[in-house]
Image 1 (tube, rainbow, N blue to C red):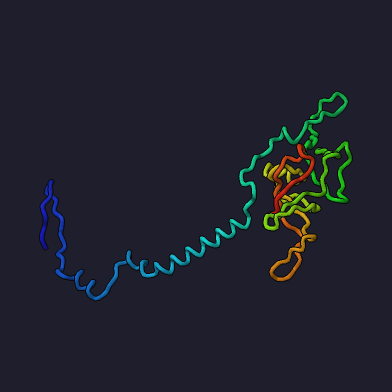
Image 2 (image 1 turned 90 degrees about the vertical axis):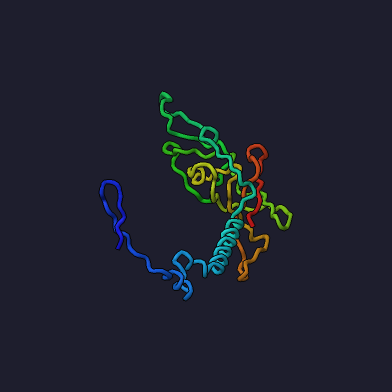
Length: 205
């Protein structure tokens, strides 16, 4: 074993290398560890492509006609109502946008009601356009699925532009692959309802 001199009179032992050891192993077909993953490269590519296609199909299934959403501020939807003997209390809010209220829904007494829904801005039907049939139908509304603004507007049933609503499509005769009739489908509102006086939407097929 040879000793290599270094500065400061410190010696490092050098291990002798046997000649031809690496060449013999490679000749016998031994593959290094970093090359082991390359054997299943073709199958891995196929799997990754399949996963990407499924992700695209899922993403395309839930695409909306208006992807760019404009959120509504609180001042544009809720109006402050001052109550009390001296009009000092300001904890009540009145909804100034179109709302959906289910049949038979109960509300608190006016004195204890925090959010006051509009009586003249309640809609129960919407104009729904089917993108494949190129036809528009007037269908009853089941409810509000998602309002792009805060979650409070969804619970209050506020319908603004870009809102996703659930409509009754049983009149269209849509059937699933198993042969069952489709009752409810989602549609996205495409207009400013307070300006047009009606709900125009596109069915999410």
